[in-house]
Image (cartoon, rainbow, N blue to C red; front, side):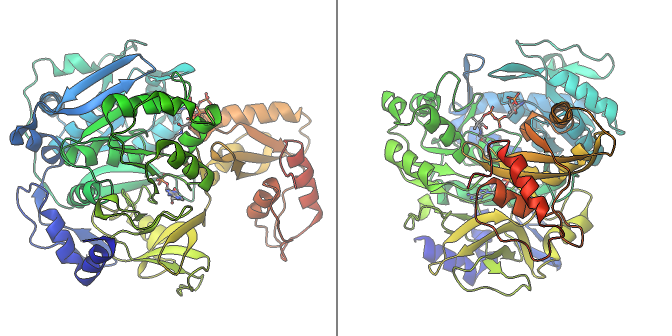
Length: 630
Ligand code: COA
Ligand code: AMP
């Protein structure tokens, strides 16, 4: 059956569709029904099933005789190491770590924060939590201590598992001082921390709180998989929201298993024994779903790549990994390809490698620009498949499903809605718009299995952020349109989220940081177009009356402040001091107009503007930064 038939099958009987898909998962107790709508518009899936994620990702493959198959290949050009971990090894490592955590009191429902770079131990820590029914929350290494502290206070972990350091091409990232700083800042204190000492840096352990990864596990009794209810939270992953406070997206266990297993064949056309590579980071949703869980649930070999698309050592590193590990499906962000294309525009380095095992390249995380898609397709000679999803959904809302037979590729579109998703484009009043008309992209409730049922400890915020604006729908926060053939086009965000190098960031959160500078009276942050990273943040600062310091000094302090408060991942390097910000008569800052001016795009004078002359001042300031070119 092709895509249209499968989608129609789902439409005709959504519950039957997902019950069938649930057959590919090992259950301790099979669910009696798929959808639980008893609290609509809050929905759950497979509520009364009993299941364990780690069993499905690890043990069942060993039981099926695949213990010798590589489960994880860690390929780390930044440390010059490669490690292969078979499914049998993984079972041994994970059950021992889980046993050690259990001996320290970690039990079902406890939260555990994981703050680690791209090392296999990060996946082992995630799986050990899953084995015990503990709820992990992985925090990306590029966040500052303050961001880690916010997450500690929100999810109140019993334990934190961290590495001594991360290795970036330009520097060693000292995780341990960041961790110590975060714990100092946070009101909640974890009972203990487990520290993986890496060769590049031996961290100082805090007596009575920190335990060495290896010593902790010495002599530990391996732990068995603990069955959990279908709606038990598998993990919490924080993502940027419309205010400074990150949203704790909850991932429900059973739906996550069922949906990810389904996507591995239907979308990525991968199964037992295939090598799958997502070049992302475990700190992001792509890393959760497609570095750790989905490939392992499906019995594939997953690659954990600790490097960058360029500079580790060169723009051929991705192609080397494809050849060396015989990758079948590869997933990355368009920004990574743009970085490669910039260093190797003719694709000369691709020719040095045999990438013939590759069947397709998948892109997500930001809009896939046609130039990059064309370039990749031309040089790799495989279909380049854009697909669209979010932390909240955990897997693709729209894609071109390779395993079901591709629908014709239309460059610029992440193709068509996947089964489970009834995608509609709405106007402000919540009415569906005609094909080709821009609107807010919404998904008719219920969302499919595996998607967020709520936000951690914030049900009201969940309802307000996602379900209130368009009753009966989930609001994606993206704007775009559908064409006459049902292809989706994702054009922009409707909120303050910007996308920098495939990383989702909130300009609101950045404004909160700038407003905290003692000389800043008022500020705005916008995302301006960036040829490499898609968008790049830019700050506007109005200083307090009487401040007569050099603007460059204030800017430098603000750049440092952002690094200290949000982290290097914010990539906040530019700000400009201006006298006034352009506003509407009711006092709203005209950020969208500022973006258009910065990007040199056509724009209309907003009818509600208070003082049009300010826009000229903004244009001049932007031109000083080399922006606002007509
Ligand atoms: N831990 C600590 N710091 C990190 C980090 C991590 N895991 N990841 C990135 N950083 C730091 C970088 O060192 C850099 O710091 P700097 O300002 O001191 O140089 C900063 O955060 C910005 O990093 P990055 O966005 O990676 O920019 P870059 O210029 O180093 O590299 C790209 C540019 C395009 C090569 C890179 O962004 C990239 O590979 N992007 C792909 C992103 C991706 O896969 N996203 C997942 C979505 S699917
Ligand atoms: P994240 O939650 O970090 O995965 O970011 C999700 C957001 O990234 C989406 O809401 C979109 O704004 C953007 N995004 C992800 N994938 C795509 C895509 N294929 N095309 C356009 N935008 C995308």
